[in-house]
Amino acid sequence: MSFAGQKDSIAAIATAPGRGGVGVIRVSGSDLLPFAFALTGKTPKPRYATLADFKAADGTTIDSGILLFFPNPNSYTGEDVLELQGHGGPVVMQMVLARCIDLGARLAEPGEFSRRAFLNGKMDLAQAEAVADLIDAATASAARSAVRSLQGEFSRAIGELNDELVNLRMLVEATLDFPEEDIDFLKAANAFGRLERLQLKLAEIFDRAAQGKLLQSGLHVVLAGQPNVGKSSLLNRLAGDDLAIVTPIAGTTRDALRSTIQIEGIPLHIIDTAGLRETDDEVEIIGIERSWKEIERSDVVLLLVDAQGGMTPADGAILARLPEGLQRITIYNKIDLSGAQAERHDEADSIAISLSARSGEGIGLLRRELLRIAGWHQTEDIFIARERHLRALSDAQEHLAAARSVVEGAYPALELFAEELRLTQRHLGRITGEFTADDLLGVIFSRFCIGK
Image 1 (spheres, rainbow, N blue to C red):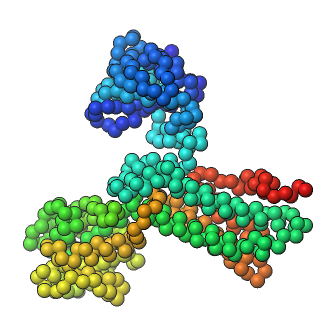
Image 2 (cartoon, helix red, strand yellow; image 1 turned 30 degrees about the vertical axis):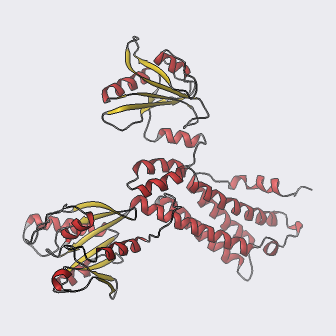
């Protein structure tokens, strides 16, 4: 017999796979009190911990633990939610989950609890994505930024911007639809000042979101160069561990080695590749081919050169083959042998750093340069953000710029101005999943005494 409510009820294990002291199963749906009674023989009091036995169909006890009940709408999903806290063994968790399925719930799909929270107005899209970002955070800085987005700081910033945009749109639409009101829009509405404020705020939000995107995804850095220039030594130095085998034998590294480090909370995914050279060794050839594939996918390549001999024709051949537009730092390694000083200097089309991977001299210069390339600057109010957020913000910036061009022209066309503002609002709405363009008429009538 099914005890789940009429609305589709879902259940899932909420704790990570494997053994643990405590395991949690969540159930979300409608009218879950009969479900709870069938499972435990008790009717839980809302938001109070109830000690209970989780029982099988024949009345035998599967597990003992804590039962929590969160009635709608004051729950994570906005529906009735049950949380079953039992012992964290995989077998017992599966047994309790199977019993929940017997009682009428179904297995939740990935992300379905958060999706229901979004559909029921408990969070917007940006907050829902922040849930996953918080779980996946690789650094403390990323986790803090994800919490800010989860608590709604990103959404509130977008909402405040949207409110100012709606106010400006109201004046434009009123001027277009009710010309008899004789509103001198460009003067009375201070269009230039309003647009400038909107553009400045949007640029600030974009900057904070871009930093958050960097915290989430990090920077992919590939170490490239001829054999024996110190790529593996540099990887070990940056990682602070002996990850790669270092020998004076050319071709020691046959395949890509990967390590993730942090600089100012930014994840740097460092990839050490096979030495790039002409060879007849079939295994080494495969490693070199993979090296070039890693280079093509990278955000920045560190081209290592032996500081004792400088840039050679073979190094120049590697340089010529690098993808056009790829960020590059030329590393003159082994200054401990050449006698050179650790320094950063400009080259024709990039910058170069002289350092010693063995001694660590000059490593600080490299770390600062990587942060510069990443576009990082220290700030405490970063939002965790994704590529789609940045694209939406960028599109909104383009339409605001187009709107400004319209009103600054010799013959301002308010119809075009209104359309650019509408498109700006549409792109902002993509971030949170809310788009208020259809409600604009209601806003106009609620704030303007038009029907006098």
